[in-house]
Image: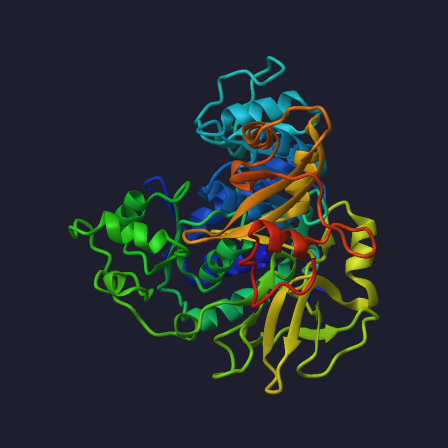
Length: 523
C-alpha cells in the first residue's frame, strides 16, 4: 500500500502526539506520560531495536505482567515493522521454554518479580540467541543463566535516539502475536495486523461509548486479546490507559479512586471481589461507568451503552477478539448478536458450502480483522485459511433475522472462569506419565468457575498410580489452572463405531457437562 493511503498503529501514535499534546497517555506505578512523552520513549526503543539488528518481521517476546513497557513495545515494533508477543506469565517453565523457542525472538524482555524463577529455568533449558533485557529494575545487575549480566530495559531504551524512525510499514502485516490455547496439543501464535486492530478498536469504542475522556484500568491480562481490545480502543480515541501488574481487588479500588478510571476489565467474580473489599466505602469508585450488580451499582456511576445493555458476542483470538457483538442491531434471535460492519461471516458445511438460516455448521470469517496467520505454522495456516476464509473450528447457526448463535467448539473446549482449556493439551501432558495407558479429559459443571477439569484415566497394567500423582505431574508440565481438579480411574474408555473415544459417553458416565454454548454438538 502506498504511503498516502497507509495507516498503522505507529501512525496513530504520531497523530495522537499532534492532536492531544497535553493529555496523559499512560499511568503505571505512579509514573505518567503524555502522548508526546510516550511517543519519544517509543522512538527511543524503536531506534535501540534497530541498533540491535532488528529487521521487519522480527519479534520481541514479553515475559512479564501488565506494564506500560509492553505498551511501548507494541508501538515501537509497529513503527519498524516488527511483532510483539506477550506471553502468558502464568505458564510453567516448560511452557515458557516452548514459547521462547517457538517465537525465536530478536529481543526478550523479562520480569523477575513473581515469575523470575520460572523464566530462569525456562531460559536455562533452551538455546536462545536473543538479546535479553530485564524490565523491572533500573539496572539489571544480576547475571543471566550463562553468568553474563543482562541489560535493563531502561538502559537499553536510553541508547536510542528520540527521532522517529520514519519507516514505511505494511498496515496489513502482523504487529501482535497472541498465543491461543492448545487445541491441537500445542499453542499457536495468532498474528493480528495493524489495520485489523484499528477497525476492531473503532467498533469497541462505538459500543462502549469510549472517547478521549476515557480512562481505562488495565486490570485484565494483556496476553488475552479480550483485555487488549479496550486498551487499544481507549488509546485510539486519545484516552488514558492505567496499568496494574495483575488483578488485586484492593489495588483496583485504589487506582480507580486515585486516577478516576471510567472503565476497567471487569469479568467473572472480579466485580464481587471489588464489592467485598469496598463494603466500607473507603474508596471512591463513582468515576466508573460500568453497570453491574445492585451492590456494584451503588458504588459506581453506571451508564447505559450498547455494550452494557447487551455485552459480549462471538469471537476468538484469531479474529481480533469479537467478530459478532450482541450490542449491534437491536433485538436479535441469535444468542451472540450480529457481525461487526467490517467483516463477513458465513456458516458452512463440511465441504465449505454456505448453509441457510437455521442450519448448524462451521463459522468462517473473512475481512481485515481476521488474523494474518499463525506464527511459524504454514501447514496449519493453509488449512485454516482455505478458500480465502478463516475457519474457526466453531459451530454456529445464522438465524432468520441474520443474527448468529454460537453452538460450541467443533473440538471440545472447557471454560473455567475466564480461561479456555483445551482437553487435547491436558491429555497430551497426562499421557506422558509412565503410569497412564489412556486418558480422556472432560469438563464438569462447577458453581463458581462454570467448569472444572476432570481426567478419566486408564492406568498401565501392573503400575500403581494415584490421582495425586496425575495432578502433580500436570503441575510440573502445564499451567496450574489447566490441571485436573479430580481424576477417576477406569478399566476402559467407551468408544464409538469407528474405534474413537466417545467423549459424549465419557461425559455421561463421569459427570461431564456445562460446555460453552447451548450444547456440545461434536466431540
